[in-house]
Image (cartoon, rainbow, N blue to C red; front, side):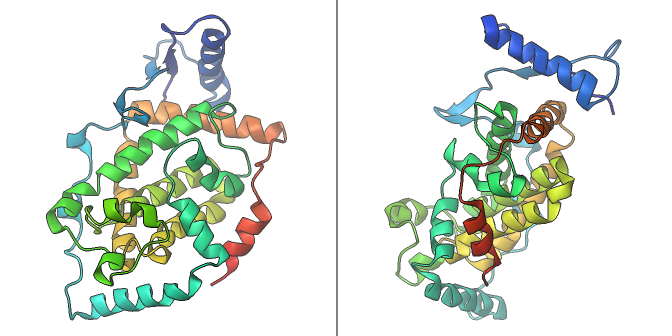
Length: 289
């Protein structure tokens, strides 16, 4: 399938407008390695719509999102073997409080950008920020909404109580406990978007696929460690994240922005740009059980 990118630069001026146009031409010629003649371009808005201030709308209309209520089985019930496994998984994380892995779980709670862009920077091997990789940041911000919203059909239906509320404790981010206690636990939205991000980036940088998928998996496990979700919430969240990405791959705007983002990553790597985070420390933390 041939996708040609045409960015909406009508509201941009001067150097910004020129940079956006050059980016579109570069993807058409260098990344896709095809000619553009006779192919209808795909318009990528320079300023995507917002659901609310600071939160970009996803690529998919609500009707096109996966139906998590139809897709997933019901959550474990009290007294079942599955609930016993969830209780055991929760209990096993209590010893991690105050550890480096606990601190990572606290950081993984943050979904606000630009901070959230650092989540995969070390495993991707390049900085992820609006200045150096604007299309990658937009891709992550918009796909986050698609994967997260796809969990709410099941969340709202089951209204499962979260583990910290069930056990009358606190999460690793106690300032959010009141808000979390009002939001259904099953499935995990963090896990859905973290797994979707891992899959997206593994496709974008296949030479780092194992590490990127491992980081996406760890992002979901952070919710168990944090006490914010049961293990089964996280496991089924990954199913929803993968389903959302399957829908995204058929969206032409997503495909075009993915191509631009991949070009940014390749360019940053060729320039020798590296993340400023403590990547050695992150890798060591992820290796611990």
